[in-house]
Length: 111
Length: 413
Image (cartoon, rainbow over all chains, first blue to last red; front, top):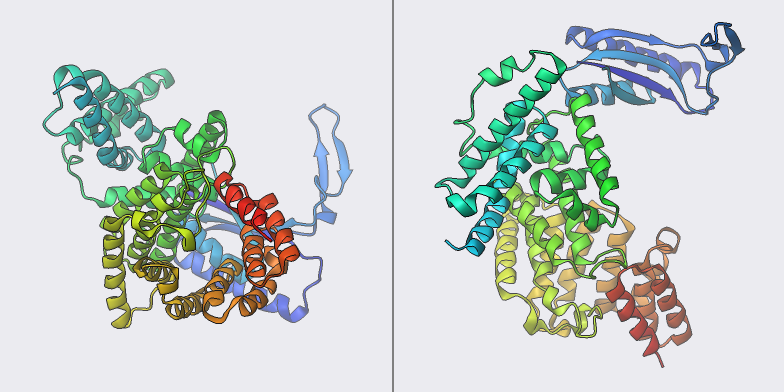
């Protein structure tokens, strides 16, 4: 069973260089563990929503819009896709991921 | 056996066997929805057939077997409709005979699934009452004063999440167990408290049906987890609270406070059982096992139910227990209840000072204002007391409590 672990950024305050380095180090440790224990599928960090582009081609004429599809104080900054036998395992990994990246996360099952 | 006897027997079997039948089917088929529907169909079949055929020798086994057959029929029908053959594995694995008289922890697994922290609290309560308690959706809807369709949707959503997110049906690992048991106890305590003092104006003020159901489910959990002191603590707390119910409502439908209750009307059997459980936990505490919050609350209620009247109460013991409780949980409601005991020990002036410090956090809570009103009344500060009673009456939802507060306010001179 695969779960999407979304990393949610909910602070406007820019974090310090030291804090970011500490977060990245903790994430590396967590990623290594996911790989060792067979939970790893994929993970990635995302650029800021300001750099997003929305395209709507449902009408045949692709409409391109600058910026994210929804303006929000909270936005996705990265994600893991993990493999776990059930939600209890996924939630335990999610809790450790939240601690590692120092942000709240959402765990959601794939269909 | 007369028709009425059979009806009564079916009701008894429903209480005793519902959770077992559902749990056996969940284990076999891994699907809460299917388990619930098949169990309901099996009980419906019993209602139809037992009055004519008589009770089977082992009603639980009959129900599990019937429900299993109905579940298999359902899977076959759906497979035919979907044109799929995915049911083959389930149907070959014939464990029906093994599922009879099953290991107790199937029900325990079911309880942990229904009270999973990934579900919202109202969903946990509703699902537990349905899947473990066997209450109908209509009955649960009445508990929460919501429409039956809304309650049905809430339960359906919870079951869908359990399936889609794969919430497991098992007893949590040792490291997670204390927190997860705490989650189950929170659900049972919520059901009990709604029965102890209904929150809304549209139901009976005291709901014996709910307190009885909460006690029954807590007894079941206690039988499944006999070594857990907090489960025993919660059961003792419920029994010692329930024991006072006959004295808590006056003939005119007014809530009667502890100091005015006719203690002769308390239920002696429940008190005896509750005291025995508390003594067991005190022995464990003496052996060095630190008690949790439910055990401390039970001990406080044991002190109250040991006293012949309010003056005979060992208030220093009550305050000492509250001090211990505050050490575990500094919630403002516990601090408020501690202050009520402090008033008996150190007087209303000291208690009022402690209560007033909670103004910011508890301004919207009726019991905060009711407590202040009572302390102000005892201090002779009549206009302030009257204002506090009025505020409490505005915020209270329980009809019997409103009647009690109104009389207290109107008695002010």
